[in-house]
Length: 193
Image (cartoon, rainbow, N blue to C red):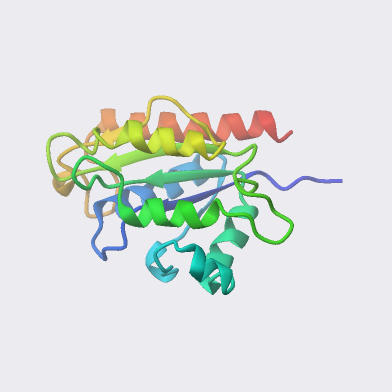
């Protein structure tokens, strides 16, 4: 019996068309693939969900939440690029994770996250690179029962950090991203033999 290699679901906590975090997430997807992993990039703009509300939930799980749940169920890790809004993670990211953490059908609350890994990165046009929101994002992911990789990547001055081809201009930063992606691929390979 052959096992499919573990898969990483990659997305950004931003829906904006020109999002720097989407750029970083798309680059991470390519790097994970190049380093021997399987990665799926999704754009949360394609899965609009209402603001979490138990009254809405009581009427039936929204269709886009069901689609996201199905995607998450097929992957063994998440790789998230999150902007920072007022020193915090984005409402889009929080809302998405809130919906995904709900019990549904035969799956208990947090059931979709159990035993999975997470990696977190952040990009910002400013000098801090989203670093203030990082510990909050890590805490939320850990609260969801995900095992969060240490040493997340922060990308300051992200507006000028990318080449026209979508790679990182700074070699040291590119190496840090590769190291994070490689650690995630290695962890998945160890735990899903």
